[in-house]
Length: 150
Picture 1 (cartoon, rainbow, N blue to C red):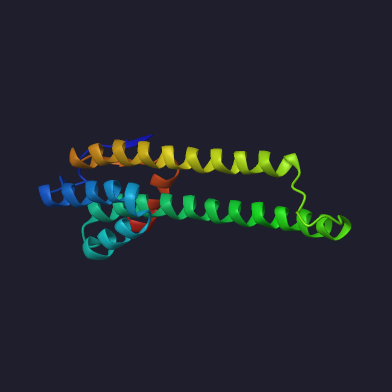
Picture 2 (cartoon, rainbow, N blue to C red):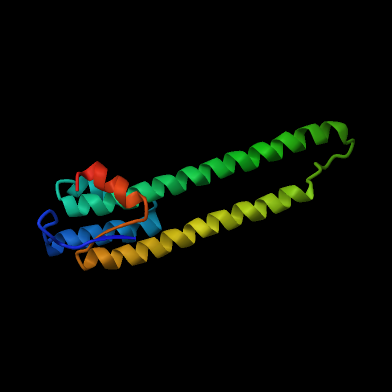
């Protein structure tokens, strides 16, 4: 993980800035992308708050995108199998293969892993922001630096 300490390019944030940056990470856990977006819109003039809120916003955007993609893939595969199987089957009930149930289990595991990662990132970076650290998420931290100009 990237960790930047206060230096000439990174001024010491005020208590309010630390609180808003920590709030962006904490709200990410319960409001997904809405909380960090509101914090960013309200406090984007602060480089410290902007940096931390953009990170939380980027993570939630990526996680939401993966979530929606998984839903489309899962339901697309389900309908691609069930509709043709229903036409060839004279039964009133649709035929669901074992792969569909396994696919749902895999879908659930991926979503729970994403939730666990969100919780870990949220707690860890809430604490780092409260200490005034310019800590960045892996990979996303570099993107946030470019966006905010830090």
